[in-house]
Length: 444
Image 1 (cartoon, rainbow, N blue to C red):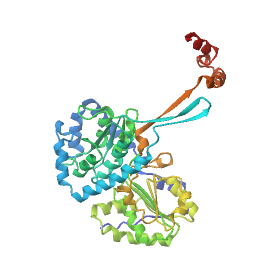
Image 2 (cartoon, rainbow, N blue to C red):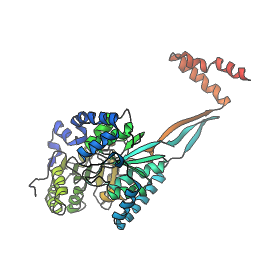
Image 3 (cartoon, rainbow, N blue to C red):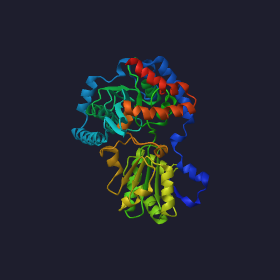
Image 4 (cartoon, one colour):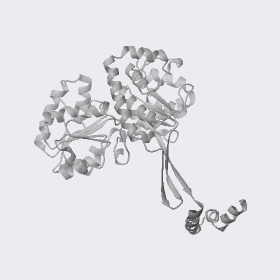
């Protein structure tokens, strides 16, 4: 066991640079990855499947052949036999909740309203054509990510939904991931992860289809590749290493806070997890309890958690008062924000920026991550200040619709011509001038 101690920061003691350092995440420091992914991307663009096979061997230690990049029907069938029926039931339970949440989220297909007599304006929503759902595997297996990405896409009406995921050393896909894909109605799964997987769906290969968009969480390699390829494929909202802020005013037990601090910090050493409170004594109590919960975790996961909570991107932040506590929370704009307090709703008006807000001690992070319904693909790296969680809207596009009657046209044309002439657009102005009236008459 490591002798690392939990980092505790007094917010008022930090200068501007030290405070900024706490707000910085791993994915904000992508310069080295941005350079490294360039040759990988170019190799996939030029050599296609052959490059995917080579990178699977190099990065995933998986010896797959060209014919094994696409998962075959018999692999789906074998996966069902390998997965515990109880887990399949859980995946079906989660899928029901996720599907229901996103069905309720669907906008009206065509929504018009009359702004003036004879003038209708509004929006029409239609789905995008194709999307690739990235499902990571490096530090574990994530069938929940299949459900959280593919189901909103299916509900939105995307016609082609595929899954890309790294192969294991034996060249197979995690069986529960395949079961989850089938539950979500996805039959096309491809063995390609990392930057090479993002490049494959951006350019298309002999086996992997080009997609209009890619969604899902991933490593800094994946995030860097998405940024590099953003002019080729819509990279979706940022979904990098896991983040969590827990706030507590001390109205729940320190054990509960310590238990939940282990949740996102066990994802990997690049995660960012903080506990924010106004009580130094409560902070120290929580810190003292963490080793008890680390001992109840596998050593690898416990070491990830210790590394995060004792490093520069995690720990405990003690604020002088609630105002400064929530100022830090809003500046951080965490992926997950858990309010571990008895009367959590009282604090909701204080929060502007977070991917998701979990209110109260029973709104457990793990429940939200796996089975509650809203997608667990949330904006990271501070993007929650301007970006929303993954939803049906990520798989749909909005088109403006307008219809102007003959009588209404006269009023609108007059004002349009006035602005067009001021801005120097003669063609615009002429098109709504007396010339148009003559053109109308020419047809009659």
